Image (tube, rainbow, N blue to C red):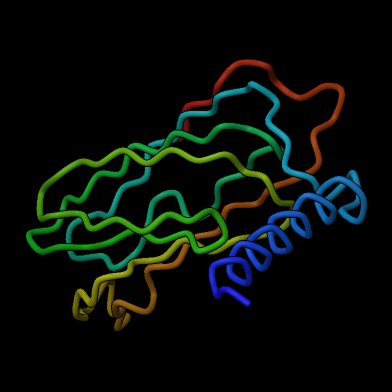
Length: 152
């Protein structure tokens, strides 16, 4: 038997299995959804503070999230949100933009993905590992805002 027929059969099986899973086995509440609502947020890494501002962002499932991320430090940071496939480096004193759709319900961390040192802030030792924020994705309600929000 020709190996190409075997490879083609395996590819067809995998694609067919994915289609079957998405259309038959995946529950309605787990299917990706996009509401058409766009929410804009500004996230800031303040100079020598080793934290994100704001530390909590709340959105509805299906919202398109646009983050303007400002690095006020004189060294690089990174932003990563594993659940939504975000991973981007932020050069010193720069601004980047990230966009994704909040397709899953739950609380998801965003964190600095580039080792950025440590220091003291208001008498408390803070490190790279303290740069963690949370995106809270909730079920949309009938009374959710239809316009984007600006959080700073």
